[in-house]
Length: 102
Image (cartoon, rainbow, N blue to C red; front, side):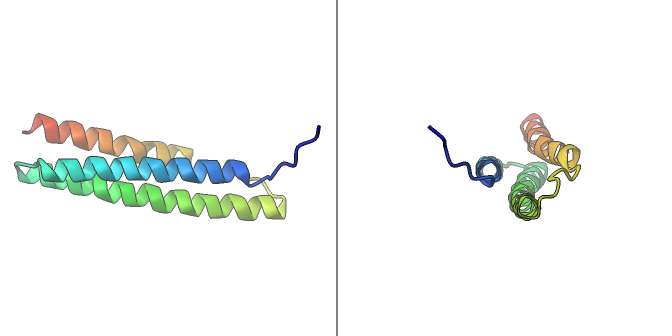
């Protein structure tokens, strides 16, 4: 049995994973804003919400880049792993700061 393989499915799954990550990050930001008792909490919640938007936009941009590269037969590597890793660590740091300054 031979299976028809769509070369775009991996990119689609990755885009969906980044969308879920952005949604979870936005939920964290909303919770931080809701429970904020100080300006630091508000800043941390806002930073997390902005991070969620950044993760969503970067995930969409990366998906489009991969689809174009696969269609053209080019490499999909663009070296954006480290900045995305740092971007994802920001909500954890902001939540920790918000909780510790309560």
